[in-house]
Length: 459
Ligand SMILES: Cc1cc2nc3c(=O)[nH]c(=O)nc-3n(C[C@H](O)[C@H](O)[C@H](O)COP(=O)(O)OP(=O)(O)OC[C@H]3O[C@@H](n4cnc5c(N)ncnc54)[C@H](O)[C@@H]3O)c2cc1C
Image (tube, rainbow, N blue to C red):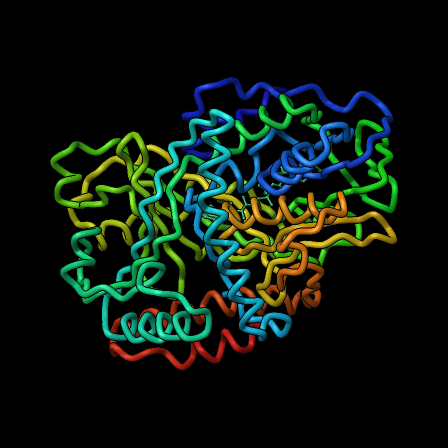
């Protein structure tokens, strides 16, 4: 049966090269490093390992095709931050460590752009920053608190992150109800599928091997069990993000949470003149139920949001990916922000799963005793973070001293998610609270206490 991989996202649909699968694993094999998952995490790890030691035998094992997961479907924000913030975990209460983490993330955005250029990966990288609109007093109050905190705790300056007034916000994007906003400089827009597919080619050019349509069922020290044979390796990297639960023993490691997206048809210049985004800034507002958008290189808007319910027992249900009430709501949200888009044709609807750890703090690590390594749990911010994770794993695996191997996320282990039905109640309850908090904030103009209380409970 031929699988239509193009219909998984705007980006895969528009990918200029072939999406025909590479050969599968052909029976048992032995390598130095086996990497499970052909998304950014797995491929960046392979890429940097081969930079450090081109003699390593590296095998990336992918169940479908490279970029089938979140890496081929995301919003294309390559942003130097992590969803939980660098100090939202006990290991990172040390501001110096959190500051170092943040600056590594900032530099990572340029690293992605530089590798893309060096490897001739034409992923439409444009570093225009991110504008988050404040669309009411509650948004503005939250942003002021955030900017003050980041300046004081991590020594950021206005060049990194700043509050902008309504006029400046509207110079970035002319969204409705704008009372101000927050501009963050360390962020680029890119085409995610072009990045992940190009990266895979670079890994192969550097001597790595990638097998596709090969499903891993379990990982144990020294051994990866797949439906096509057994791979023996001294080091095994788990890089499955939202799909981690499909591995034996990992049902409660990361919760898969859907984020859904729509893309408009290419917009005429007259419409762009009304909207703005001349530098391809990525954009959002300050609501709790995250939304995110980018102006694509071919003049569309790709726009997404959370809100799809979590599936009982971490079920990944592809049936909601193409048409759901949530897609309609996401488009309504976009038109509410940019009324000029009323009547614009939506050409693509899709979705994919994020990997959410119980404490929302991502993690990278290698257990030397077992040879088992992992990285992930980026929630919705893994495009840049996965590059830093891959470089860090490469350092850890090869024993290379670097200023990355002791960052706050290295060796971090989130507690596991609760068993069902508690997990289902928790996550879907939290989604409802976020929606209610947004409605209350836009009605009253005051920050919702309910949302603050929920965030404390969730972590
Ligand atoms: C809709 C959406 C929008 C997003 N927007 C942004 C954004 O704008 N900016 C940002 O920073 N982040 C964003 N993210 C998150 C970001 O895409 C991810 O954090 C990142 O892609 C994770 O990369 P990964 O390699 O860890 O996981 P994935 O890309 O999910 O890769 C995991 C791979 O493992 C494969 N696999 C699954 N099961 C098996 C198995 N049993 N055996 C072998 N292989 C298997 C999958 O097919 C997949 O290719 C978004 C995510 C989604 C879904």
